[in-house]
Structure formats: C-alpha cells, structure tokens
Amino acid sequence: MVAKIHFVRLVITSLVLLAAGHSYAQDELRNTFFKEADAAKAAADTADAKLLAPRTYERGMKEYSDAELALQRGRNIETVRSNAAEATRYLSDAADKARLAKTALAQVMKSRQDAANARAPDLSQDLWAQAQRKFAEAIRLMERGDLKNAKRRDIEATTLYREAELVAIKAQYLSETRRLLADADRARVGRYAPITLGSAKQLLADAERELSENRYDTDLPRSLAQRANYEAKHAIYLSEIVRRVRDKDLTAEQLVLQWEDPLRQIAGVADMVPDMKTGPDSLTAELVAYFENQASELQALQQEKAESEIRIADMEEELRALDERLGGATAERAALVQRLEAQARVKQQFEQVEKLFGSEEARVFREGNNVILRLVGLSFDSGASQIKPGNFDLLGKVEKAIDIFPRSELIIEGHTDSHGSDDLNQKLSQNRAESVQQYMINAMRIPTYRLIATGYGETRPVASNETAAGRARNRRIDIVIKPNIDAN
Image (tube, rainbow, N blue to C red; front, top):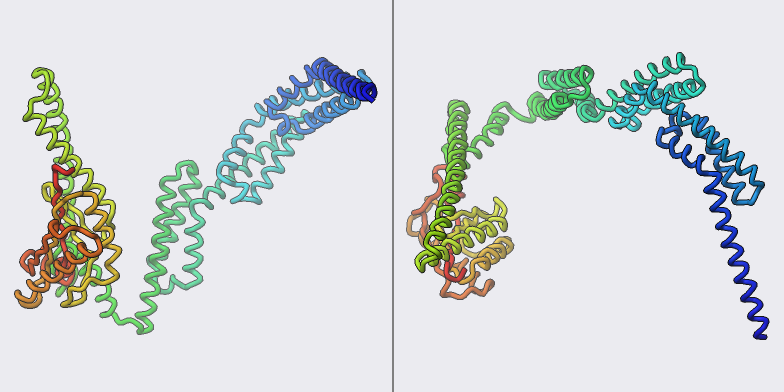
C-alpha cells in the first residue's frame, strides 16, 4: 500500500515538472518569435494606428492572435514564426501609415477633438455622425494611398466637425434662453410685454452672433445669455401683471401701491420715514445716499482695520526686540500679556457665538469685552410676557452661546417701542426680561447669582418709532454676556 502511494506521488510530481517545463519552453519560444511583433504592436498603438490605419492594424492583430493561438496549441514552429512575422510586417506598416495620416489629417483631428470637448456627440448628434463618416472615409482613402481624395474628405469632415462644435457650444450657453423664449411665445407674452420680450430676443441674437464670430471667447456670449434669460423671465412676469390690469383683476392704483411696498420695507431697514406723497423719487434718492454712505463707512472701517493690524504687528515686533534687550519679561509685562491673551480668547469665543445664529434669529455684536445678543427672533404676543414654545429652539442656541463663556455675568434687557404709556412699557419690558431670566434658571440651570433682569421700556430705542419696521426693531430682548476674563 505504501509503495502504491509513493508511486502515485512520483507520477504527480513528474506531471507537474513536465507541465512546468512545457510552460517554460513556451515562454522561451514566445520571447524568441514575438519580440519583433511586440515591438511593432507597441509602435502601432503609440501611433494610434487602430484609429488612423484600421484595416492594416486589424490584419496585423489577426496575424498576431493566430501566432499566439498556434503557440498555445503546440502547432508547428514554422507556423508560429510565419504568423508572428506577418504580424510584425502589418503592424509596422500600420504604424507608418498612422504617422503619415496623423500629419496629413492634423487639421481634421484637431477639429474632431475640439468638437468632442464641446460635447458635440451629445449636443449635435447629427452633424457629429456626418463628420465621423467623412473622417472614416478620409482615413480609408489615406490608408489606400489616395491622398487627393483623402484630403477632400478631410476638408469636408473638418467643416462638419466645426459646425457640430459651434452648435454644441450654442446649446450649452443658449439652450435655456431659447426654452424661455419659446415658453414666452406660447404664453403670448409679446402681446402684453413686447418691449421686454424684444430685448430678450435681441440679446439672444447678439449672443449667437458673438459665438459665431469667436466661439472660444465665451465670456461676452455667456453674459448676453444671462441678460437674455433675465429679460425673458421679466417679460413673462410683466405680461402677467399687464394682463391682470387689462382684465381689471388689478387696478392701476393697486399696482402702484404694491410697487411702493418694497420701498417702504427698505426704508424701514434704513430707519427712514417712507415719504412718497409725491412719488418715490425723493425716497429713492434718500435711500441711495444712505447706502452709498454705508458703503463709504464700511470701506473706511476696512481700511482702519488693515492699518490697525499693521500697527499691532509693528508693536509686537517692538515688544520682541525689547524682550531681547531686557533679557526677559517683567512682572508687569507678564500681566499685560496674560490680559491680551484673555482678550484674544474673548474675540475667538465671540466668533464662535456669531456662527450659532442666523440673521433672522439674532444680531451678535461686541461692546468692549461684552457680547450682545440682540434676539430679533424672540417675539411675544401683544402686551404679554410669556415665552412661546416657538421660541424654544432660539433659546437653546442662546444656552450654547452662554456655555462658551463660563462663569460670565448675564444681563437680560427688555425694551419696547414708544406706543403706549411710559409706565406700562416700563412694566412690560421688565416682565419680559424676568420671563427670560426665569426660563434660564429653570430650563438652562443657570445660577441666579449670574443673572440680572432689567426693563428699559421705551427709553433706549435703536430705530425710529415713526415706522412699523423701526418699532419692530425697538421691541426686543438683549442679552449682555459679560465674560469673566480671569476664568477664560
């Protein structure tokens, strides 16, 4: 039995060695017969012969595959040698033809690539298909050596590729505008807003002309298309308004009042009384002057900030130089540095708080080291001081802001507008401040000794009480966070 097992093992080992030897022999034969064919194939692939000399390349690859198959099946060595030699000849010829075609057809190949980059296969399918057929014909003629007719197809294909590219570029930039104008025509917008719709159509024509004249400079056409989109949408909007006026669904007076309302709202934000008794011109001029002044002030503040940063950098450099001369920091300097570091931490914490609130929830600003949370999103019912459930989410963010400043002192300030008696407003503001204070004690678990609730009534307005928007801004709860510098 043992002898039989040894015999089986010997047979298996012999078969394995025989297979390995056969594989090794095949590798050696392949290295011998395919060396030139592999080099020719690599050269043909590098020259892009599959595209530029397809028939010759295909013949070469057929011979190459036949040689590989013959080697794998153990056919006659001469068969393998013959197939490999033919593969080398065809593939070398394909590489030569491809290099010639690449030079002779350089123009059409560039146009083809430009069209492909512009997504012509998707956006200009018919022209792209026509160009591809002409390009294939040029390659076949080139491969056969018919240079004259190949050049003719080259020119035809180039023209088609460039047309396809232009159509694709226009589709990318102008398709939305065309769709909008088609929608406007179906809605008969031209009947009610012909001037605006005409402007949109002219802008589209200008964009098309610019692309036709210089398809690669797309900045101006893109801008024209955007303006055309705007005018088309505006025309659709205006046509609906004009139609309602003509159908007497909207009177001219109602229309004017509707258009005055946004100016009233803007005036409220600017804390102006919206005087439009003789039209909007005077108020418009005031608003323009106001916002121009705001822009100037902002620019001045930005300049001042930049100059301050430069001064601080210079002072820090002086301080370092002074340290080197004095050989170290004095006790006074150490205390100053510690305080500056604490102030820097407050600034960093302030930036954290700012990110907690949206503009409709709170205005966050600083007065010295104090952080003010002006809770514009916290509202009370008229004459009431009870906190509504709808305000719980906002107060949750307030709690997160307070947690950023451990051991800080908190002042809750209540404010009202000027409508109503002074005494009632004072009492109402105090009650509202105390309501928020009690919520902080109960829901936020903030110790009582950290909290102060104060009502100021109508005595500290931040906007004009002559407008509804101004009065809304004056009715507010401000939370003053006074950081404990030593605790930070």
